[in-house]
Length: 419
Ligand code: EPZ
Image 1 (cartoon, rainbow, N blue to C red):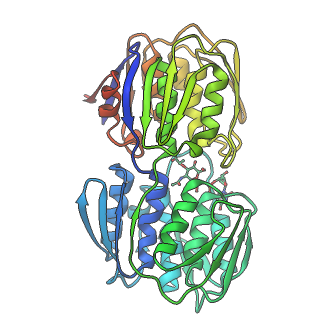
Image 2 (image 1 turned 60 degrees about the vertical axis):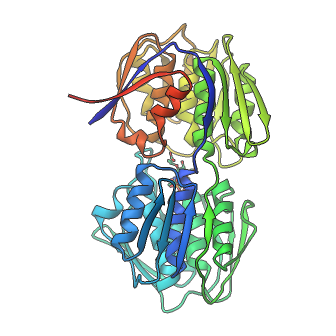
Image 3 (image 1 turned 90 degrees about the horizontal axis):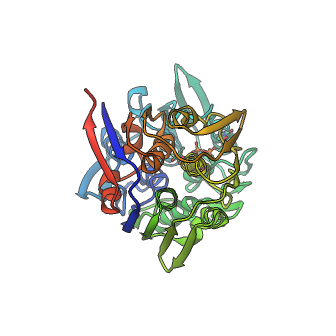
């Protein structure tokens, strides 16, 4: 197992380029199943989740070629169906997008229950509700979700919970259904729009993505197309927080500032200087910051994926901060690790109360999930001394070239094999 060693106390300075959005990439790759043709997807982040999905698609019969480290050519012409076993599906949450894509193309799919970060129960009842509304029969036996339909017919589907995954999965199943599908109370995240653009580029008819009502007119067939994944606003937000936490002057390049409005607003509230300039954001932070409260909400609210990185920043801000995690009930596993570094945090249910302390001290800590790992990296940048972070494989799932990007900003970071 590898670990990261971070010597804290270095201010960050310079420019960091943001990669393609993990959560968009891991939806668009399975969506290529719908094309039954060749697609070229670029601006993919070079991370383990993308590599795992590329391998899974080729195991399922697609021809996958790596054109460069951020571009895949995927030809799904020869695919005849989809059965993703536990071994294949357990690695990541996004394997469940194969259900919607294979159901949409083959009218049947079998995918084992997905894996993914342990941040709560993560049910998929809304996905199943959508598939059944379209006419599919869905069963779950021995951990395998099977969906099958004589034909798929457009329907009106109201999501009881605003769910990114369910919104995308229903879009995938509906694009070649007969008639029109309306998804109400749909998620509005930027990667829903990215997915709609990709589907329409393949010949689908999807309107309203980015609002809470998405209208999909079924078409006969889709074809291949080329698509560039949007920049990763969660990676960008992580570096914005890191720059604020370590102090310094950092330009975060290749972003869509509109996607970062919530994090920008909260950093400004703390006293961080944030300036937007086209497709880059500049962070200047030096003086002691003021503690604030954050509440995670669906887009365009404060993103749950930045709650853990933000919690690290609040540990040394002046005063008391309140963090309310309204999306996932198990997303405070990083708190005990931050306490090892001297943080003063009390968790009651979905609320964490953070009393600002003078400073953090280094310790050996362990990442429990992707964004918890990111929060520990930020804490390591802040702490006096050398922090060792174990289970780095979680962080590698979602951050491309993490050490190189941090070292490029002047951080003292190295990776070691844990003896
Ligand atoms: C996606 O997870 C992301 N993962 C998560 O990012 C992100 O935190 C989440 O969206 C919210 O933005 C990927 O895109 C691979 P949801 P997803 O369905 O789709 C409940 C990261 O760190 N719900 O929007 O699983 C669910 O329990 C990862 O990059 C149901 O009740 O999230 C949660 O409370 C972590 N029934 C809420 O909805 C369902 O059928 C939002 O979940 C589906 C979801």
